[in-house]
Structure formats: C-alpha cells, structure tokens
Image (cartoon, rainbow, N blue to C red):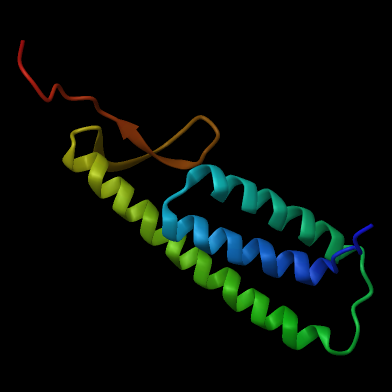
Amino acid sequence: MGTAVHPLDALEQALHAERQALLDRDAERLLDSTQAKLRALRSIEALALDDDAPARVTALSELNQANAALLSRRRRELNWALRHLGMAEGGNVYDAAGRVGMRPQLRSLGTG
C-alpha cells in the first residue's frame, strides 16, 4: 500500500508535468497536469502548513510563473501561425461572456 503524497509534493509534480507538456507541445498532458495542479491547490488550501512551507510555496509560485510565461509564449506562437495561415485575423474581439478572443476569419488556401 503506497503512502499519501503531501499536497506540496503533488503540486510540485503537477507543475513539472505542466512544464514538460508545454515544452513538448502536448495539449492532452497539459490539461491533465492542470487538473492535477488544481487538485493539489485545493488540498493545500485545507492544510495547516508547517514553518518550512513559506519558502517552498514561494519556490512553487516562481515555477508556476515560469510556466505561465511559457504558456503565454506558446499562445503567441499559435496565434502567429493561425494568422499566417489565414485562419484568424490579428484583431481581438470580445465574446458573449466578455472574454477577449480572436475572431475567426477563414480564407481559402487554394483555388478550385
């Protein structure tokens, strides 16, 4: 029978998995690691942390920020590729929920 993983350890594992998924451009693993990260965060919220926790939480926060920067870079790369393939225009628009998004603009890449 295995021992339970401490929520901070689970968060660290999820953040490393998230980073690897971003580096590998693996969307499915990215979604899985994000779910694992959210589960770990919910567990941490219900936990009384010890005196060593603040330094570890700070380090995990920095890892999360580095992942966010990498995710932002991947999104810019994807948006650039879509624009150059004619799949989306460069202007941002708001959707029905008030979120900023890209207005799809399909163009034919060939002639019939």
